[in-house]
Length: 237
Image (cartoon, rainbow, N blue to C red; front, side):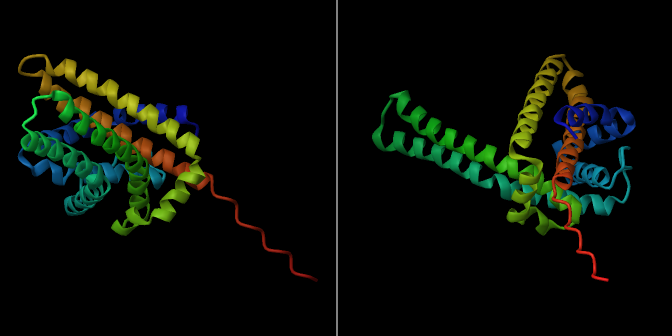
């Protein structure tokens, strides 16, 4: 599939069942008291699995135990992939604080420079890891095992089969979409009392469903990019 087709399909996908969008939104809201975090990541992984299996409808909310297990898998993979950028950025903050404490400087450029430098490094690392992360999630969904998310040579081969250029374009497009949805959520959140609730109940789950579908579709391009198996030579007569 072309990038435009993937994005178009992913945009329409959640609207096929608004009830499931709202249910996922409830779990997003329940994340405020921890409970929801053990369900919605697993459901998003279920969307990836269903898409890779060839289904075009949103999966049902059932088999709750399996959803919890999948949620834990997604949480573990997310932590592993993004812990390094987080550590780098945290080190920059603590280094800036330590420098200020040691020198008693009031020059804001001293700590801004430290935080800014490590911040740039953390952003670069975050981009690199996120590029691998999305394919890692899809690979885990395909094989239904946690270890598949860390088979780096296989994941990089998948990206090569998609095409690095196409994959990076897809990543940029999805990032822009996330920014647009973030702006919409911010505007809604400015509405007193109900705005933030609507953003969490509808906008956020719609975006995440869109993302899950899109990840599966771009990953499916790695199957299309695989070289065809060589034909066996005809046996001599």
